[in-house]
Length: 266
Image (cartoon, rainbow, N blue to C red; front, side, top):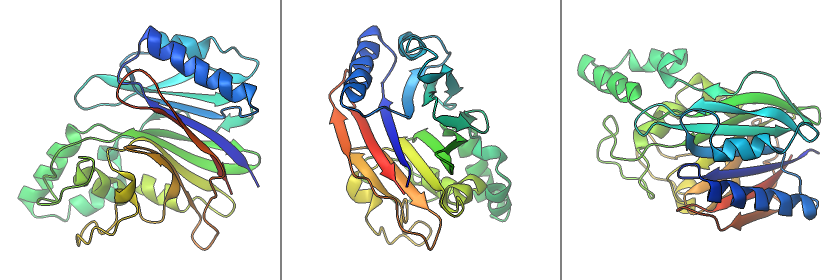
């Protein structure tokens, strides 16, 4: 059974201090025989080349697939995502922003809305911070990866619904009704879907039945490791056992978020 080591951090903006701390955590993991296989950073610089990017690039080609991958978040804020993968991880398609505005399955649902609601949804998607992701092969298994700095605020489609942590409920509704989410939750026999990032929902929210008709659960069937608003969670093919999470750690870091690390076993 594969053991995939994942590290995720909302850096709240790249800095030399943040880069140094992230390097300490990576080096400490290696010292204790825990080599990160996938590293995600949210709220990186809008363009590649910032201090954290340079630090990850400085880890060298011997252990990691270089250079680090970069994608913009979109929406307000002008930030980006970084992903670095270990040499044991074979990237199948480039890491890139997932533009839910172009998702055929989601648009098919939105296009059936009444005209005013449809326009509200399309306008919200136009200005929304998007996830990023890619597909990889690790130890013979397929893994669909997604990282997200989930937008905050009240829903404009799902009005009257408040999520613990402040995430916009529409964002999760859009994700749940997209083709990309279908790929994450039905990854195929022996494969895994992974969502990692600052999801702006509490640990309790992931495991709570909200009871709202259009969004009864935020991430139904997802299990993993959490630290306040930051999460690394996985989803197996329906009918197969949930992934196990034998180890997980949180590390203090500059900014308002801790670095979260966990191992997925499936």
